[in-house]
Image 1 (cartoon, rainbow, N blue to C red):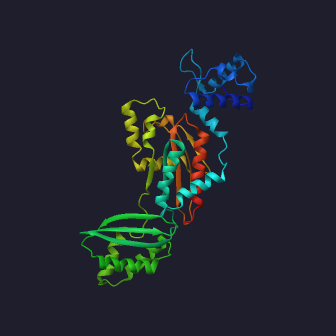
Image 2: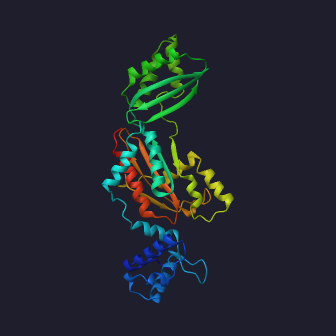
Image 3: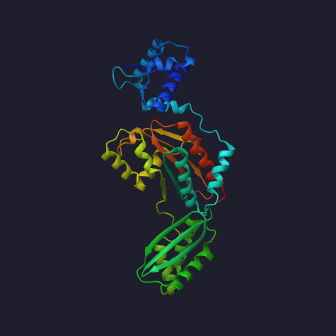
Length: 348
């Protein structure tokens, strides 16, 4: 078995030029195309020899005998590794911050971020805010929806809002809900949510078995998740229509399956977790995953560029752009970095 050697600086430059040419044209790259680039000062025969070695090492493949070479997933990965990923322009940062700062909640800000990323990249943008364990309660709202249904709204001090509709065992009045809301806000406003739930459970357990109707309502709401942010986070996707224009070589039915799969929140969250998993020193840095596997169909020909930023209170905000493997990586990496930095720089 042949042992692969590290790429020399010259070979890496040639490989990057091949990838750039393929990104721009979508056509197989011939040795003559590269030899005409003045910076290499090499004949087509010399370039052809380098390309043959790159193909032997798995960086290029030849779709047809007479065709040029096409970069593989391995080539795109090598190309991305030499791109700068932390260059921030203050003017661009200010522009994005202005677009985000009028949002009243973290969720609204995340939704705006997905719109911005789509406009900047023409890709499929994803943004989500995932509550941390240290969320601090600002206040709760409780609204009767008729019958036995109640809307519970939890607002944390970093602007995160979570809504949940629950069904109680019996009907509840607005007056009863107002009493419960006032009690919770007065007693637990400013508390860590985990600590607030523990203390509330302790107080309910110590209450007399014949406690009054308001405590009964409070107990019922507690059992249905009051002060609990364990619900799945919202996932904001924007630009799904752009997927139709991606160079994915999919049949109509397989493209339809891909679009349907991307509507599944759990699948998208798993994809973000897998591609943006934490690594030492990686917090707040752009990460690139070239090739996303075979499930759902078409993901193998796509790349994901994203990052995770941590907000005050522990909320993890994740931003990503999905695009074809033949995308403008430098442009998308810059867009993701600027949106993430602008998002995390705003006050809660």
